[in-house]
Image: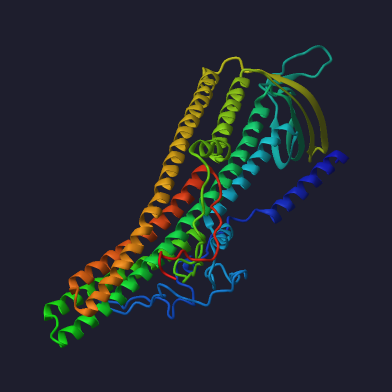
Length: 527
C-alpha cells in the first residue's frame, strides 16, 4: 500500500470519528412545558388548577384570581423600580421606559426576528461556499469476479489475444480473477468562473441579512408601540375606576341625605328609591371599571412578555407632551425613518440580483479539479495509483426553455417588488395622515372637555348646597352628579386618547414612544 493510500485512509477514519461525535444522533425532541407561561405566578394565586372529578358535572366554585388593582408601595422619585426576579412577574411599579426595556428582554416575538437574522447570516455563509474549492474523500471495500473467455480477437503475430468489454476496454482471453479489493479516492474541484451566478446569489444573501435586520428593528419599534398603548390603556382603565369609585361615594352620600330627609318627612319615599337605583347603577359601573382594569393589566403583561396573570403595577404619566411637527414634517421623517421603505428598496435590489443570476445561466462555467485514486487488489496482490488533474469548460446550449422562463420570472419579481414598494409608500403616507389628524383632534378634545369638568363640579357643589336647604330636588342632584361623572370621564378619555394618538403617530413616523415621568394628570379643579 502506497503512502498516498495510507494518507487518504487516515483522513477518512478521522472524518468518520468526528462525524460520530459531532452529530450522528437523531434530532432532539422539544419537551419544554408551557405551563409556566399559562399558570399565574405564585404571588398571584394560592392554588394551582386541578382536574375536574370524573363523572361529575360543572360545579360552582369561588374563583381564586389576583386582585384587579393591587397597590404596592411606590418607590421614591428618582429611584429605579425593583429588578425583575424572574421572567414571569414584575415585583414593583414600572414606568413606561422600564416596561419597554422589559419587553425588549422578555417578548418572545422579538426572539423570532432575532433568530431570523441568525438564519439570514447562515444563508450568507452558504452563499460564500461556492467561491471556495470542495474536497471529497471516499473509501470502499469489496470484491469482484472477472472471467474473460471465448474466441479471442487477434491483434497480431506474437501478441496476446484479447476480447473487448463495452465501457471497460480490452481484457486478455483466459483471465480469471476472483479477489477482494480496497479503493481509496480523493477528489478536489474548484469553480473558477461562472460569469455572475455565484456573485448574484451571494448578493441576494447579503440583502437578505439587511432585510432581516431592518425587519428586526421595526419589530422592536412595534413591541415598544404595543407596550406604550397597553400602558396608557392601564392608566385609562384605572383612572376610570377612580371616577367610578367617586361616583359610588357621591351616590351613597346622596342616598344617606335622601333617607334622612324622608325620615324627617321632607321628601317622599319615592325619592329614596330613586337614590337607591342611582347607587346600584354606580356600583355596576364600578364593577365594569374593575373588570376593565384587570383586562388592561393582562394586556400589558402580554405586550411585555410577562405572565398574563401577574399583578403588574404601573406608574403615572407626566403633563401632556406637546408635538410640534407639522404634517409635512411628519411625512418627511417617515420617509427617512420607516424601516418598511428600506426593506422595500432592498427587496427590489434582491429581485434585480435574481435577474442577473437568471441571465448568467446562459453563460458557460469554467472549473478545475483533480482526483487521486488508489486501488489495492488482494489476489494476486497488486495496486494501481491514478492521479488526474483537469480544467473543464461546460456550456449548456439548449435546456428546453427553462432559462428563458427563469429570466421572465425574475423580471416579473422585480416589477412586483417595485409595485409593492409604491403601494407601501402610499400606505405609510395614509397612516401618517390619519395618525396626525387624530392627534390634533384628541389635543383639541382635551381643551374642550376641561372647562366642562370645572363647570359640572361647580354645578354639583351648588346643587348639594341647595339640596341641604331643601331648595333642590334629589332628581336635580342626581342629574348633576351624572353630568359630573360624565364630564370627568370625557376629560380623562380625551387625555388618554391624546397620549394614544401621539404614540400611534410616532410609530407611524418610525420614532420611539415619547418618554413619560411619574406624575398622574389631575382632573381640573381637584387638588
